[in-house]
Length: 194
Image (tube, rainbow, N blue to C red):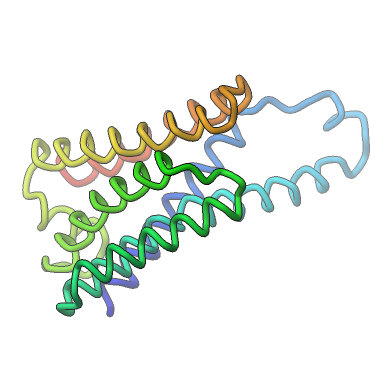
């Protein structure tokens, strides 16, 4: 359970950092300087955006981490996969984003994450970085994993863009998120495998 909590905490922190990185890259408007108290309103709004992003970013990751723990405890993989598909479908439906292709893209992403989390759960270390270092041993192995997860995430992003009508605003937001995710992952790689 300790490794589970270490991984969960690290993933939540990662999602907050990505969200904050996306928000901070947006320039301040004139209103920030002209209207007293606008900074406070904007601060509260940004906090809400960070919580919302973290919730959406973590949903498939939490499903994958729970599935990895269940599989590690020898639960039947077929029943775990069924639960995942049901949860993803219901979640996407609640966001008005349901499509069979998007469910499949999320399922593929979760499969990559399950393998990753299983690897971390079965290594030695008392911090997220030590788990990664023990699981992947060198930069090349970790980089191969990053390519795999990035491809799965980009497939999810493509499906979201398709489902939302190829909105320019959605595309820009997804691109900003992808850049922040890559930046944070490179930082983790550099800290572990310099």
